Amino acid sequence: MTAIENNVLTLDPEEARRARQERLERIGKWVLPLAIMTLAIVLWDRICVWNAIPQYILPRPGVVLQTLHSDAGLLFSSLLVTLRITFLSLALAVIGGVGLAVLFAQSKWVEMSFFPFAIVLQVTPIVAIFPLINIYVDNQTIKLLLCAWIVAFFPILSNTTLGLNSVDRNLRDLFKLNGATRWQQLRYLRLPAAMPYFLGGLKIAGGLSLIGAVVAEFVAGAQGQSSGLASRIIEAGYRLNAPRLFAALILISLTGILIFLVLSLVSHLILRRWHESALKQER
Amino acid sequence: MLLALRNVGKVFSNGVTALSKVDLAIREGDFLSLLGPSGCGKSTALRLIAGLSTPTSGQLDWRGSIDRSNIGFVFQEPTLLPWASVFDNVWLPLRLKGVSRAKAEPAVMEVLSRVHLTGFENAVPRELSGGMKMRVSIARAMVTKPRILLMDEPFAALDEITRFKLNNDLLELWQDERFTVIFVTHSVFESVFLSSRVVVMAARPGRVHGELPINAPYPRDEAFRTSPGYAALCRQASGVLVDAINSTAGSHHDGH
Image 1 (cartoon, rainbow over the protein chains, first blue to last red):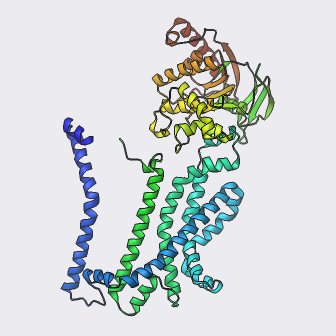
Image 2: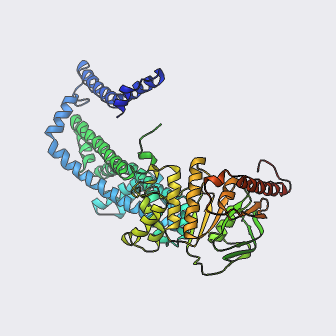
Image 3: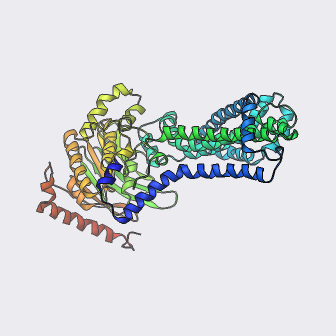
């Protein structure tokens, strides 16, 4: 429709410039990052060749790709282990974060009393807590889950709490006027109002749960107890197997990007009809 | 008589006296406007009547057969659930009373047609204009068939053309259903056009300054809006309002 309008309308120079600018930005958004990425990979390859860098220090991109293919079985089974911890801990972070937020929302007193504990958990580096967890928990999976959960649950808790408390005052009065019960207020007003905040927290938590899982594996893996991607990296590091190290690294990055994209899509689908953040800019 | 406010006062915890010694009688079927400058406590009075707030002194005497749990309230903003469709927004008061979607449907569709929104059931608020959002808000207040409708400057944020249209539609609704309206406004013209009685309030402390019956017959239409009679009533009401503003001891004329 806009294309037709553009053909029919004669635009003044300012609007024409703006239209051109928008068109360029739309193309640039995709082309630029891809071009720079390609350039960087080519440069990487050239640097290896020009300086004759040995493979165990910096492998060429092609070799990394080959390794990704030849070690696929090993790497992907490890990826599955890491993914399992990631998603389980994300699910637990959602349940725990939202559950605690709803509890906090029931009373200012509960929130004031317990929120500081959540902050303490959040600000203490997980690597520093792990030795304690290692003492108290025997089960390997639960150990890793607990670590990843501690890292991931805070953004969900803090965002959802903020959302549950950000309900329009008049809407609250409206519910009161109509004799809404506490449960009805939560179900029909506060939870939907908190949805955009929760989804924002979920996007952050998605990335953090992967980081949490990998970090937990690293600490556990250093004691030879893990079979996730992190332990592949440690192993490859010991053996100076740089191509595999890179391949594992790439897998982790791609997984993180994929988690972010999927959660962004979920968020967009849920909010697209009503929330400002999901609406197209109109002038 | 429907409701009498007797010597009602309200002092907020920060020490501000919002209302002082307010006496006010509301008759069944009244279209009563509370007119006054900002800070005169007209919205506070409305919240007291709605039961959203309790008086510090004095009392509210409810008479007659009014079900006090069934009060329609229209806020200054449309105050809709942004994630819910027009239908769901209007259904809300019934839903909170446990009426299922199917059971509520006839009432919701009927009240939507009364505010000229048939065909917009599935739209969400952001897809509607300001005037249409306010219509949804009115429909939501009307869906429980309240005998008393409280409106807190509902049209203040709308443009004049839309406001006139909504004024007309509100009067039409009121004449058909014969509920009681208490309408808070700071517009002389709006209060005179709509009301059967205008109660003028003064600020610091908020109190009733005077009352003006508007004896023009209903139905009032666009012809009334431009008639000499309407102009004369507006001049009269303006006079009382200016008087009320000047009566505020040590008042600053900018309102703050």
